Length: 169
Image (cartoon, rainbow, N blue to C red; front, side, top):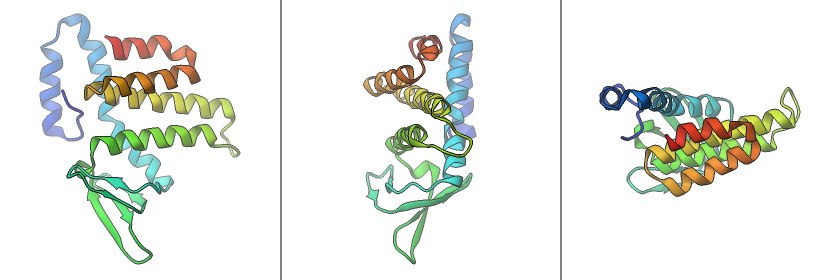
């Protein structure tokens, strides 16, 4: 199946999960729920933080600029001092979602000060790497899924069992 960021595809995935043997339904449902929340999670982070690495679109374009805002419908890319472009979430390439997650996991590792200590940063980064691993696995990008899973486990070895269950069903 493919990731779900709209309700039409969500019904198809629910049918897919219902078609699985009973022993797999719970884990696949959990995987689906994690993946379904990725867009909203990224949107929350972009609401508070800029992303200065441009944007990759489904059509194959890569545009330079800074994402300065995101909401439920669009991300806004500032391409110059006076010009910005808006893109619907479904116009973004899969690789862009993966890049967002990787970038913000790295950002969590480097975040210091305020209420975030180094251990919390590592824990947050490990959770974000797990989301990236799940997304890659769902899209059958298995090498990338393993790469992100290893990064997450290296940061939070206590997540090894959870990661194994969600990725290796």
